[in-house]
Length: 332
Ligand code: UT7
Image 1 (cartoon, rainbow, N blue to C red):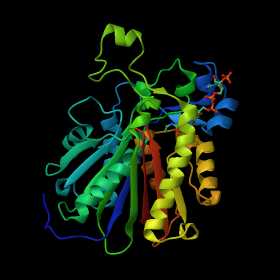
Image 2 (cartoon, rainbow, N blue to C red):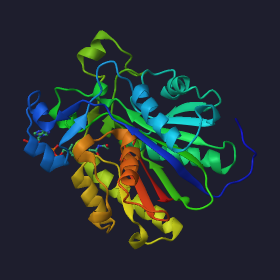
Image 3 (cartoon, rainbow, N blue to C red):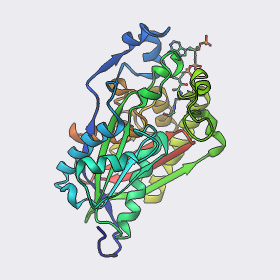
């Protein structure tokens, strides 16, 4: 469905949802499968436990549950949904898109659907993409979901990566609003660093074969130490840019929602950008790094916990494979 092509100045979030699998995998559980321990994981990452999807549970399953809740909160009938974007690096399959699979389950027959690939920055990229369609009046409403079953692509023999990630989904419904909404956005990419975090197998470069499986190419590979430094700089700069764009000082921001990759990264970003830590939201101790789902799950919890009141300013900032980074300044 296409609305009247009138320009809207403000686009905001009118409903939120989240869903994580029931199964909890603690650091102590991990210590039974790889050579690691709770103390190392806690001090190096801040993660205590993460949620892991049961075999057979897919990204679109998690996305569907989060989407339903967001639509319910927004009082929007799926039949009236115009646009559905799913940010994911772990779709059910290469095609069709996870968005089309979720559309089918929701019965959102009028929605235009596609997936967006920006790794951990996926939710931010997808929200900014939806914002553009809504500002031009091309669509009246949009559902953005960040969802991952990243556990399917983790090498459970590699202690340097398997302790970091978790599965989950966060969702938001977006629409033009009279007051508040998105005040500023920022996105950036650096393909020069594409091989710092990647999954080589399964695409056209290394189609599935006995050899690709033997070489463990279907698992995520990461240069954690280099990414760490880049994450701090890129997220710090991006957060500063949205504040400058909107002419808002950091003192007037009530909540910062960084991508939940590592407590030390988040603390370093806060220090670098001179943000008070008590305003920085963290839930990675409970979920680990849920990639594209991370920022939307955190936004959902911030609102559920009543940390934010109408008119407050929130900065969401993310960083991920690509490399990609981005920020949104949102007035609630
Ligand atoms: O989502 C966005 C993209 N991802 C990120 O932003 C992740 C960014 N990177 C990080 O968060 C951190 O670099 C890690 C948490 C991945 C690693 O922390 P680090 O402080 O950079 O550790 P390291 O990789 O330099 O490893 C230090 C030591 C090594 O041992 P040696 O060589 O010093 O003897 C590792 O082998 O820790 C060892 N190690 C572990 N030990 C126990 C690595 N993983 C583990 C583990 N348990 N799970």
